[in-house]
Length: 186
Image 1 (spheres, rainbow, N blue to C red):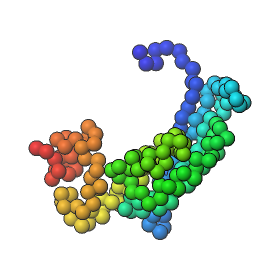
Image 2: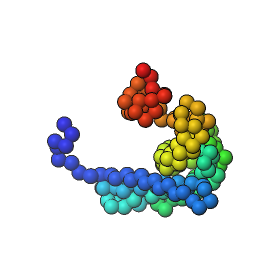
Image 3: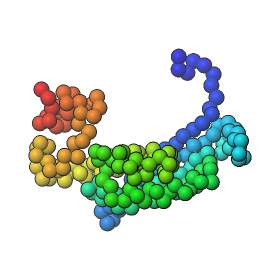
Image 4: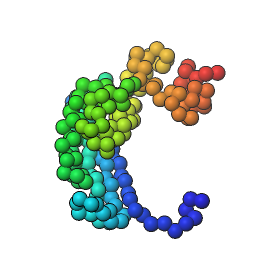
């Protein structure tokens, strides 16, 4: 059973995301991943990474407008395991102009691919999208309610994209019936 056996910490991964609303109305989303080793990691072709040292410390920042469009991207690697890793950061500029939403993952793969980017930075992009959605949600909802109190007539269907996407927001669930009864299945 979990927790029933003695254990030793061997790795810590921390993913941190921050969302900022700028004075010009745009959003900055910063995502960072840090991998700290809890034990020495030997390599054949380079010095080992020792316990307490970072294997990865890298991040990606996005500038996004209210229409889910990526206006700018900056990636950086403070610590990377291989000398070639930092060469991947420029590939992420290819995401400028994309819209976060359906098909976003496919578009990332098309523009960045596997061998031009960095697996860790690419993984962070999902968290950037989630962070942007969470940060901008109250404001987006307020704009929709100001247009029409009935969510069935909201012009921005993305405002309710979470409906039907998890147990709490299932179409016949209590949360939907309480928050948006017009959308609930009876």
